[in-house]
Amino acid sequence: MRYAGSPVFDRQGKVIYWMGVDAEVTELKNTEEALRLSNRELEAFSYSVSHDLRSPLAVIDGFSRAVLQKYGDKMDPESRSYLDRVRARTIEMAQLIEDLLSLARVMRTEIRYETVDLALSARRVIEDCRNRDPQRQVEVDIQEPLVVRGDQRLLVLVLENLIGNAWKFTSKLPVAHISVGSLAGPDRQTVYFIKDDGAGFDMAYSDKLFGTFQRLHAVTDFPGSGVGLATMQSIISRHGGRVWAESKLGQGATFFFVLGNKAS
Image (cartoon, rainbow, N blue to C red; front, side, top):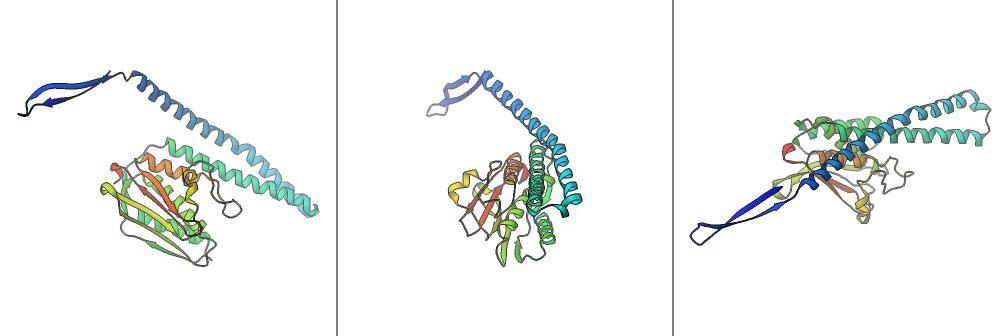
């Protein structure tokens, strides 16, 4: 049983009686424990399935590559096209498995709080993006300082996902703009944001943003597995925070997040 009570005072400030309630919480505790157990089992299952898919996929890719190397110059264009498609799909599936494993690891990893410089991490992520796409023209503004308390490894994953998306969805612009910074939010919370001027999305579908395998753009326009934002939201939630986005189709997007008290 759980009890709660409050005193009732007269005009002189004396307690005249108490009002209270008691509630049976055994069933609630049992439900919470069952839910925690179910989540752990689901995480273990997801990790196991993703891990076990790697081996057969590697075999498919290996034999496809061997056939192309040995017989590729003897194949007619249509047959070679079929094998090229098989290899392309195995590469996509391999990336999807890696993303699922990353999501499973996030759910299982213990949060270790330390001082994290988000601005420094953001600059490193941008540098990696520039090294991969040296031909891109992207103007980047990173606010200083952006120091928080949180898990260094996991918060870097958040930046990799959000900045990586900003980089990807501005890829069709001759000159793109990305901003990383913070602003004052309600209840004295600091709100962090990553803003771009890229493809954006229709806010009518914003409820799908953070779901696993949910995509708001065709994979032929912007590649991806649809797992990154789900992973990022899980990390923010595990830090006691929340994440949301604002956007207009064709006018860029801004992703916001706040962290919990321990991370502030």
